[in-house]
Image (cartoon, rainbow, N blue to C red; front, side, top):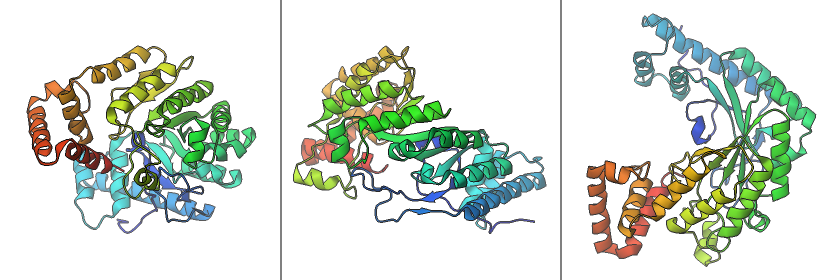
Length: 386
């Protein structure tokens, strides 16, 4: 019997690398919600979801997964979510978003799960542990469970509690480190210090979890860029996380930091300055075995990616390759990258037709609005992804 009306709640965001994950919402919004660079939860109240409600959602997700499998069997695919089965779910208007997302998850076959929203470790251990256990019971095929949390929240958890949470099934925690420079952490109202980041990161690793730390190139603006790059790298060196994920700052009008841009108190880095900042950050990383990724369209240089220490020079070469481009090619690359046409610097000359179209666009924009018009074009393209 089809259960097309069954659904479960999902939150607004997840990390880029969790695009194929099953999304289960344990809490709503962010308990801190004061960071000047973040637009996601502004104007929304944080709330803990009751354990019974979470379990109901997990049960609903299981029902939907079984329903999609049953559809596959009726289509002669023996429970496998083939392209034909996926298409059948996507093209049937009676199915809701929960069925569609589940069909994608089953088709993808990675079976990872991301727990929403911004800070699930703020839950009482006595609620989080049974929620994780129930999730594993209902979905034994799950390969990995991850979540967001905040350093300040983690630091307040006992190591014993974190070990219980790990044993219950939480494999990886994503932390928004953003910067390790204390004056910048204070300016951005992050609610934590560099030492606090280190304490939380080391505690999660000691508890047996994988740790993914987000760093935000550009957050120091033109005034604190070097301190931001150097001190963030030094904090990362003390943590030695499993992953360092770069996610560059963007400041559209709805972000609170935009007010400081208008007042002149904060001046954004140009892309060329940002490249130098990233180079300084990578150069300062030392003595760690982290994997660096640049897995978001807002990042200028997606190729800055690799395993430390062996890929350090390769990552620095990417930055220097960008810096060695002519002024014209850097401009064309920036437009192409921000518009999603280029993923690497080599695309400039391997995608000749695209290059020509972007060159024409840059020329027309320059004629109509001058250099500032081109910068407005680039900013408009980049800000779409926030």
